[in-house]
Amino acid sequence: MEYVLLLLAAILTDNFVFTKFMGIEQSFVSSEKASTALKGGGVVTAVSLVGGGLAYLLYHFVLSPLEISFLTLPVGVLLTTAVVAGLEAAAAKNSALEEMLRAQFPMLTTNAVILGAVFLAIQQDLGIGAAFLLFLGAGIGYTLAALAFSSIRERLCHCTPPAAFAGIPIMITAAALAVMAFSGFAGLHFL
Image (cartoon, rainbow, N blue to C red; front, side, top):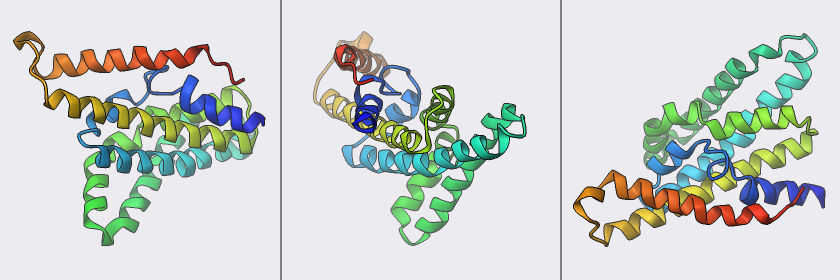
C-alpha cells in the first residue's frame, strides 16, 4: 500500500511540475496539441524510468560506496542523454517520433523532472522499488501537466484576450491559474 501511495503522491500532491516547478518549461513548450503532449509525456516517463533508474542504481552501487557521490549530477545527465539517444536510434523507423525526439533532445537530456526525481529518491533514501515508482509517478505527473497545458492552449486559441495579454502573457497567466488549481491536491496526504 505504501508503494501505491508513493505513486499517487508523485502524480498528484508532489507533482514535480506543479509543486516543485521542475520541467515546467518543457511541459509548457511541448504542449501545443494534446497528442504532442501525450507523446512527450510518454517519452519523459520512459526516460525517467530508464535513465533515472540507471542513475539511481549507479549512485547506490558505485558512486556512494566509492565516496564520489558528487558525480551524481554529471553521471545522471550523461545517462539521460544516452537513453534519449538510444530512443532516438530505436525510433529511426518512425519518422514522426524521431523528429519529435530530435526537436526535444536538449530539453529531455537535462529535464529537471528526471534529475529531480533521482535526487529526491537519493535524499529520501528510498529502496529500489520505491525509487522506480517515484520515477514512474514523476513521468505520469509530467504527462498530466503537459496535457493540462495543452488543454489551456487549445482553449486560448478560441478566445480574444485584451491586447496587453495577447500571446505569451495570457498563456503564463493561464498556466499560473492551473498551478493554483492543482494546488488543491496539497491537502491530501499520502505519505
